Amino acid sequence: MPELPEVEVAARNLRRWTKGRRIRAARAGAHALRVFRPAAPDALAALDGARFRDLRRIGKNLLITLDARRGGAIGAWSHLGLTGKWVRRAAGQPAPKNSRLDLQLDDGAHLHYVDPRMFGRFRLVPAARFDELPEIRALGPDPLTDGIDAAALHQRLQRTRLPIKVAIMDQALLPGVGNIQASESLFRAKIDPRRPAKSLSRAEVARLARAVRASIDFTLASFAEAGVDGGGEDIVYVEERRSANPFLVYGRAGEPCPRRKRGGRETITRIVQAQRSTFFCAACQR
DNA sequence: ACCCGTGTTCGCTG
DNA sequence: TCAGCGAACACGGG
Image 1: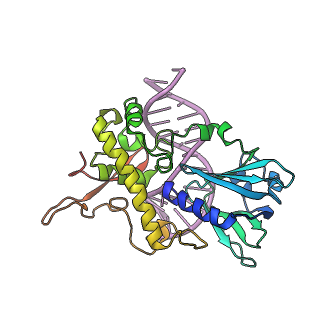
Image 2 (image 1 turned 120 degrees about the vertical axis):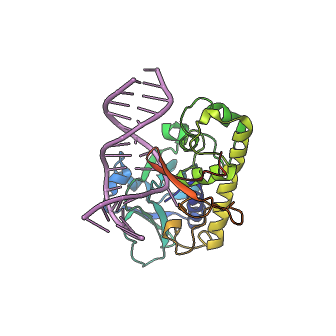
Image 3 (image 1 turned 135 degrees about the vertical axis):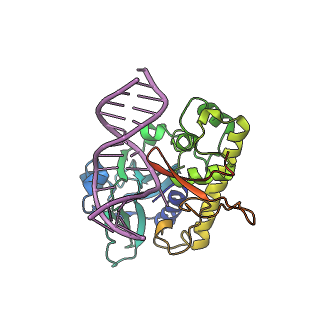
């Protein structure tokens, strides 16, 4: 279940798997219509014989550019939704469960788009004109690739009465920040998630901007440590992993605050904001 | 059985 | 006109 760090890992994996490769055959899997909506999966034939040229990530979006067999560019826009992932299977291996799309490459390997809940999307974009898609155009600068302009962020946050936790999940502000990174960033910045966004001072927004970047960097580093992007065929999402929860507060309701001193009593609280769980420490987040 | 979920979109309301 | 809200999408895991 992907936020910016998980999608960044998917981008790195796909670049490695597709470098210099061509698609031998693209096939739709079970229930693919839902994933392709509104475009029809028969358009997939356009991918046959296409060669990978470039792959960009903006927020949670993967933008793949290919050179079509008959010339010209084709774009593929992939959004992983809540349960989507890209996995690689060597030639001859069985398709994974819930494969919605199967790209067989010219080295015989298969790239599968796997998505049990099908909240994700895969759409072909003629001539790879990604900039003309309203969904892409609406995105703000990518926090990892472009950095965060704290002054601009402060100005935007001044215009909303939403709680700061809800506000920073707006993909037009901080694309790629989702429910986990929002909680983690606010804990790092020591800001109460319930505060109205417009109540944050410039200095607090600057602190938050640094915290968002630190949280993303930390999550990516924890993936590297776990071997998630170390050349493996699959990405193993955090909640599926056997190892310990790598986050400071996310999923830790009732546990001690990481900043708790010897003899302290502060614990992590779970609340619901905009129908999503928020985790925070009421003692150190003000 | 029941509850929960790392995301987005749509229709309604004030 | 538009920010904000809640339902809906759909399935698997604890």
